[in-house]
Image (cartoon, rainbow, N blue to C red):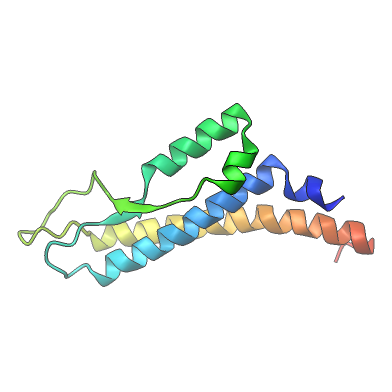
Length: 128
């Protein structure tokens, strides 16, 4: 009875996106911490992760999503160096990305906790 809840496509995708959001938060924290480091290049979750997740969900390959797909960090290829020392971090953009990531993380935790609440309700018979 538990497996259908935790094997659902929404749950599996939400878990992977939560992993990516947590990793993105680490990248943003690193970017802010190194905003004054000469030559530092901005980090971001690899764009390959999103593309692979989309293609595997379209193909219905949930086992690959669950077991093998993991987000990784990479240098942002689109970040331009706006300073003479080669640093590509812009604090305003990092703060905006941090706020966007926090909203996304909250939304995804609602999806995951909703699945857990359904399981709790099925076991106890109570909503709260």
